[in-house]
Image 1 (cartoon, one colour):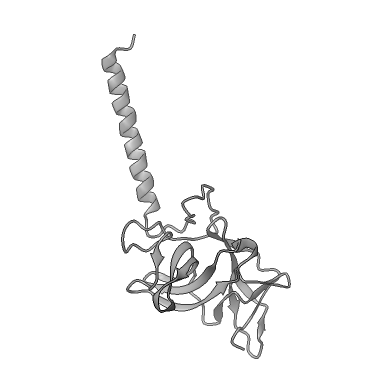
Image 2 (spheres, rainbow, N blue to C red; image 1 turned 120 degrees about the vertical axis):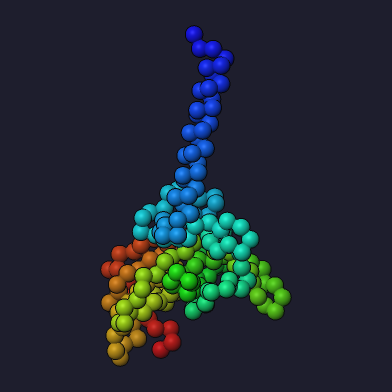
Length: 200
């Protein structure tokens, strides 16, 4: 027969185990080297191993998925970007891709855009982050100017091999597509991906 005292001891043991498990889970997700995808808070599906994102911001001034900003934090530099045209996957909402250099390397952010504020600035919210591998001397990063199977796809980000005298690049090292509904970047097969130099 179980006594009331025995039940209280069992409850304490289960509570202690739950606290330890929760603390371990929190610490694992906060490791700086963690390259698992971080979804928007409403997305409960697990992200694939081929996507990469930063941990959720943990407080005011914190940098991470869910961070809202209208200027970049100290130590971050904007490199390039493009606004994703509304419609289709964007469902009328406005998003952009931003290539940013961070203290830990280059990334591409998928941002949702807020309403215009003073001086034309718009607040942005980071929905997903793609960690870009260090580029070799013969590589370039392309965003929003790549075709997938012959059709322009503004959600594609690709690392291409530089080729002299061409404006259309066919040697693709790696490619991803921003998945807006799942708030992550999905790895793409490079077959069928070509990119054009928007500045040519």
